[in-house]
Image (cartoon, rainbow, N blue to C red; front, side, top):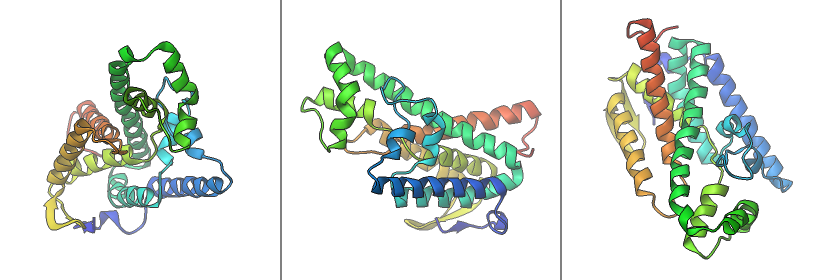
Length: 252
């Protein structure tokens, strides 16, 4: 995205956005540095399925600051800066940070609710002994760029042992908030160089994520339902705040 016709996202960077950029950057640099020492931080700080042997409670938070590569963190942080700055300046630091964390948590919840459903669909074809083998040995097999030859076991291994990383859920929540707060602001997209109103961009992007999540194409490693979870929880939270205030204001 090249930008939108509003100066509110530029100028002095608000405090929470600035600190989130710094924290995400530090996590990324630490990931690269530790990788050179053969230490995989994604295995410790990425979010695993809650029934996985590798799940830890802190991953619910830490996964939001981990990224899978430079382009992943670049686009997430670019969107955070561009859209989040405008929102924080209206909401204030405390409310914006609350929204950011809740939408990130919502992304985790919806993504792994879908994973839990998929796991249950596979369970009738998996013995308890095989399930235990997947839990204990599955991640090490994937780390060797291998997987089980049985398609059911292979899919179950991916569900249990591929961690989710990235701020994308919270960023999609921010996109949703921007579309609700500045619905008629025109955006210019790099891949579609025609101005489009923010509300249509958000609706269209959400529809694409829903279609992609349902399609569940082989080899697609994007957590589409995590993105939708961020948008869903963001929508609910904004409506809740507005209902409690008795008006449509987004201020503090």
